[in-house]
Image 1 (tube, rainbow, N blue to C red):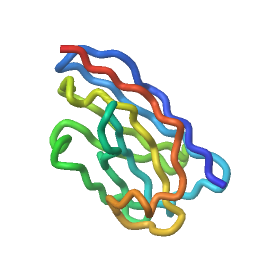
Image 2 (cartoon, one colour):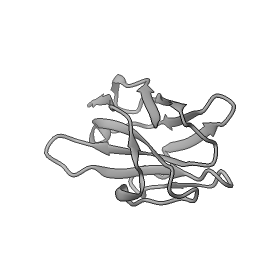
Image 3 (cartoon, rainbow, N blue to C red):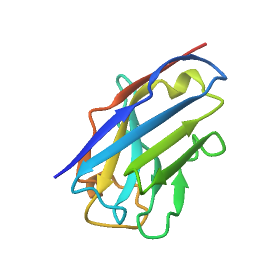
Length: 125
């Protein structure tokens, strides 16, 4: 079992920044691919960013590219999502995910077998 606990969400004005953290425990491993998804009210859950466990390579959705940055600290078993230049459309519940199946980057929801409870991000205009 892998337990994922997100933190760092909150209310911020448009143009502001937040940093989300995701602490992994249990069978946490630096070899696992990890990432972030988000879900806004009435919308499908969507991919935000991923980081591989093997090389540390990253991939970001077009909607956040240039504004958000995913990173990981393997010694702390923690993944981060630095969010800059936030927009009202970034408002959503953000979920940390981990895959014990693959170590490379993937945007497919089904590959991630562990999900956190989510942390709410609200961006006011």
